Length: 408
Image (cartoon, rainbow, N blue to C red; front, side, top):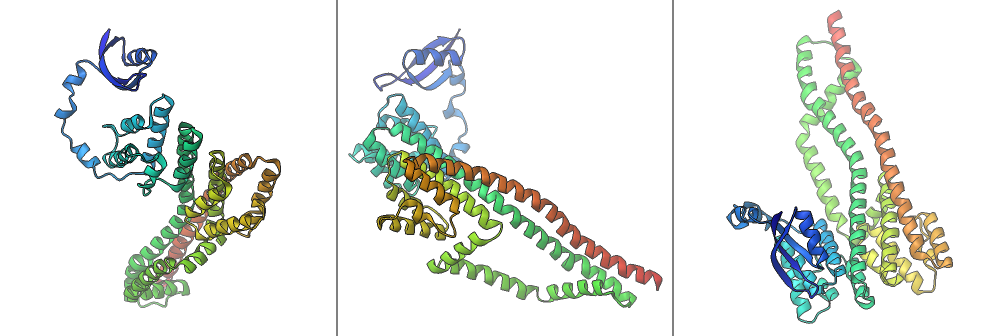
């Protein structure tokens, strides 16, 4: 038998600590749970004495102070808070546990501010609004309804699920869009290297031979001279275009036009639209199930969508509903697939809108994965053909003139 130090919370919500004997840590934890105690910390007697955290160099803890709060941290916070609430702890007790020593320092400060707000009489949702920078509007709206219905633990789990799905969709979308961008960068890098490094050396070699160059070789020489001679102008021009595009994107009307244009691109537009429909279906279904009204759900979603063309269409949909139109009619647009409005219409007629929206989200999630896999499968041979073609053209131009020199 071994002895274990433990810290736990009893059925009255009071913190307690002591020693317990068991075969191993799992057995000790099981014994504590059988005694209706929630285990906070468990360590074997003797080891904790020799491995006192205060005696360990705290350079990692020092670095953790500067780590920013990530979406993963917020997701874990909601998961942990839901678990605490399911065990029967009060909201303040749950928040205090979440703000324990294991919490990231910056997150701990945020949770401590929430605790102070709740202790002063504010509701949990109002306390979250005071730290709106870290908590999405969707989460706050869902918690407002949870405070009315009394299902806070259930809603907290749903918030965590929604945020995890959003992060996963964002990751998949970025993966899909980064691949074509990577292909373009590879092509630019290969062309730049050949034209600015390889071709000039070859040109100096041929200049000593004083031979007439074939058309393909002369084309490479002219391209190399053009890029090298005007490299400063080209660099400044590209930089100006990039900076100007960034400033133009800050103008609301221009950004709306650019975002609409992005949705029309053959590859990127399809991925963006599919990702949005997956997020739209899943998120709206969760909001409706948590008790948020349809109009409020649409408004919250429109505020959190990066693409302004899609956000504006949701705002127009909300206005159409206020005028008396159905949700499905309001959704009809050239940037929203017609399948979506047809399925939403079925959900409105049958009274199962949340279930139908969830099915839409699942369908487009699967569709997004298929599109990304298909695009990857198509772009891989395209990269080989394009890069290989450029390399082949350069070799052809080189060997063509070398054979001409050899004959002469």
